[in-house]
Image (cartoon, rainbow, N blue to C red):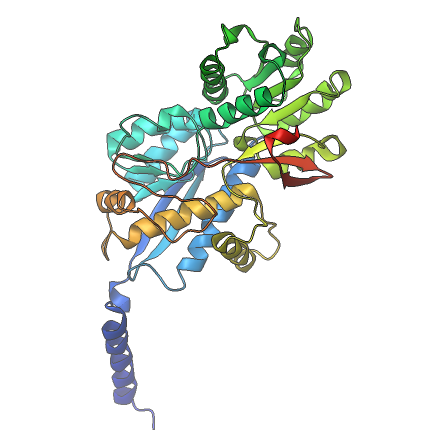
Length: 391
């Protein structure tokens, strides 16, 4: 007999059982909002969409159990990879949506306007998809915490690899986006060349293009007019213009090496290049998405559960890792996390439960989880790992 009294009794008993077992009741659970301002439209949209997909795949996974009784919700605003849109998005997320943090924003130009807002409003900007130095102060800004290796580290690895393979400094050229993103990678390469004893590396040929355009012809012309024919071109750009540049440049420089930093968007670049992609190099800040590391396997399963049609990739894997690191920090922030306690929780992550074949950690003085790079090369449309000695 199912009387109203018995029904009420069962609900009360279940509620008490949950409270005793897990330390919280359903009434105490809260939805924690995390913000994201990213490129969901425009020429860089594949990057924003993949970062969003990776973060949401993890949130979908972790919300089945919750974190200290709470769940995570991602509030996403489109900035089209334009600073003029990113700034008001940051204000809306922090002031109106009351997010505890902003996560996974895409791009250096947008970061340049977002970092001051995060610092002023004392709200964490976490795991941005950029390796720019503006997010890597020493000592670190309390409200800026990164996952990935820097562009300076990526271009330094390229310089080391090229010089060790026998390519001379004067045989290296640069093709970069004409903004803070391109500047960050270029300056890192200049620093690396000077460290190698190269005098006046800024005299090396340097072509540029305008953000959110495919106007690469002028930059290409600069490189083709170089006094010394380039044997390697280090590129700091987005997948659309970089793909167009490589296709055109290969007509004149078929034997040159074309090297891209991770922000280019590997999957989108390979797709855009088609049969012109063989030999193109991309440095990665995550391991290959098909490796057997425990967390990478977990990512593939979570991505499939979230979107059965989604294909694994480097960018969505990075989004997943960013979300997982954030959740690990939240675990240390207690059942009522706030903007400050989450930062404290992240800074105490010395050995988070993340297996990617390389140690990741944070501290009060270390706000970059990983310095590891994985060089990859396109072969028959697929990315494969390689050693710099192979080039």
